[in-house]
Length: 259
Image (cartoon, rainbow, N blue to C red):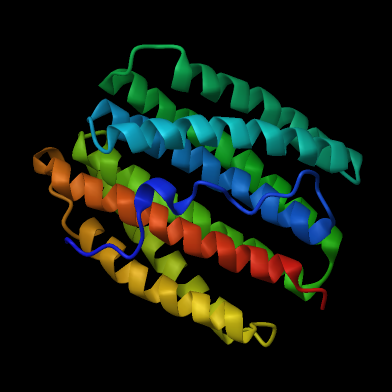
């Protein structure tokens, strides 16, 4: 898989992040982005451990940690109810434990398995917060922001499990998680494409997502367990970043809708 639509090192150099939470749509967007960052950080950790896209992976890990902490502070401050604030207090604790594992030890297969386990707790709480913000919104577009934002997470989750499977961290379970995420990702693309709220610009971005998905999925389908080559792992890492960049734009476009 040699063709690439974007340059991975700059594909997410700057996410569309406001200085503070602007409104409930923006809260859903940022809350959903926290889900993605939990998976993206693990993906970068696994890539570094296997010497895949080393410079890029280190940048991805560093930026993911900084952005997660920035948005966590903003979402806690914006929380419109004690229940939502409680979710983000819990997420703060889970994140600190996860971050210590990401940054505080020498990477190894044993530590990588812990990282994958800890990111699941962070993901679950981040998803809970996103759902709570969507409920607080009470508007149809809030659901679309959530769905589009979840696509970002799924792109990173599939790449993470690809890299986990490549180093034989629960290879069977990793393959099953990729299959589950693939099904959800494709179904959500159809929801986003067919939504009455979808603008021409949103549909154009989803055409780009379809094209990038072809490259990404081709790499996922070539998982060879411990025999996965560095080149194949690099392709999956790069295309996951490219797909993420597109879906982040789609999420932002839905978030900007005022219907």
